Amino acid sequence: MTIKEALQEAGAKGYALGHFNVSDSTQLNAIAEVSRELSLPVLIGVSEGERKFLGMHAVAAIINALKKEGVSIFLNADHTHDVEGAKACIDAGFDSVMFDGSKLPIEENIQKTREVVAYAQQSGREVFVEGELGYIGSSSALLDEIPEGAGLQMTTPEEAARFVRETGVSMLAPSVGNIHGMLKNAPEPRLDIPRVGLVAEAAGVPLVLHGGSGTADDDFVAAIKQGVRIVHINTEIRVAYRKGIQAALTENPDEVAPYKYLGRGADELKSVVRARMSLFAGK
Figure 1 (cartoon, helix red, strand yellow):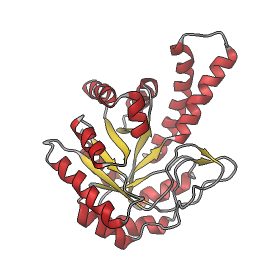
Figure 2 (tube, rainbow, N blue to C red):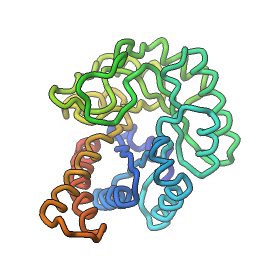
Figure 3 (cartoon, rainbow, N blue to C red):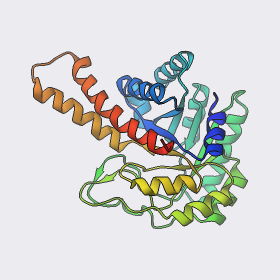
Figure 4 (cartoon, helix red, strand yellow):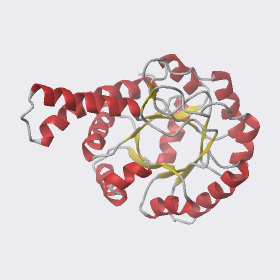
């Protein structure tokens, strides 16, 4: 199954694919295990910081190995802020690239995203390019308050239609009430579900919901019905992974074998991934 086929199937059946960011192979293999278990395709995201830590070519090699084992798994270059970085990920064999020009004026965002799309089309492979419209913050962390400027200017249907038409992107990440990260002491903002539907109709391409961590289950279900086809989860699995590792080291503070305490973290992470993938698929 290609990423195009996976998205077409999700659209036809009205569900969404889970997208989970990783920064080590333990997390990646745990997510792949859940994908096998549920027989659902999954996307692995690595942002610029995660790529630097894990290694761009190393993660691509792991993904290719998992594909050969029959796992429907795809690699996304998440939140890439410069054109040359996006091109490097395409050259490295990524299945999709997200060019994040959300902080740029829309004309510059369109111009740079279009350049990435053109490069992907010349690659000789099927590479999806995702663009972003509207600022939703930039940190997958536990937050004291909503990031400054996040959600103040949500994506309009008119902007979405223009952006897709002038860039040729395969997917669009809009601002519809979502934020990156999770609030420590407050519920997450609710999604603007009617806006999701209007933007999806105007864009005519699959929508990608970023900042999914902490979002209410019923908002996920409603947004998927309106055209969201990929949901990003990062902070939730980071918290679960750390929680498991902390528990393992608290129980056995003298443990020095990484696979033992990292394995506990992986178990906690898998629990979150399993629940999210099942929800997104309507299972």
